[in-house]
Length: 95
Image (cartoon, rainbow, N blue to C red; front, side, top):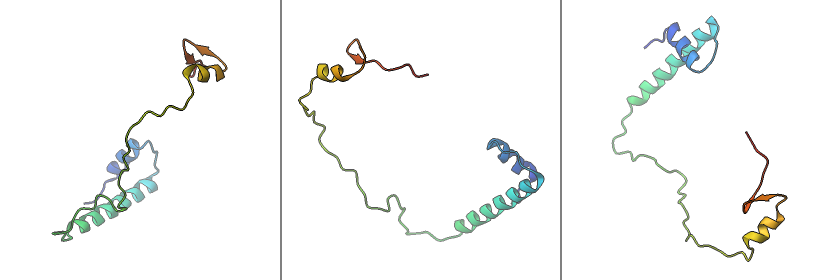
């Protein structure tokens, strides 16, 4: 399947790229090569090959969600803040 120059320009536009005619030609050639490679992969016999979902054998480590009392009250923490308002730390407005 041969990519046309308009296909390459369309893809470049979707990516926000302005391409010269030479770059458009090169992009078309690259896309053709990629499609050819993908077509070659379609010809592989993968019967009996298990899908690979995880290659590192890592697993989630779950722990019980427990509240730990650090011995510090809300009032003590708020007293450390430079400015507070209605039991909250007041910070500069960020837009």
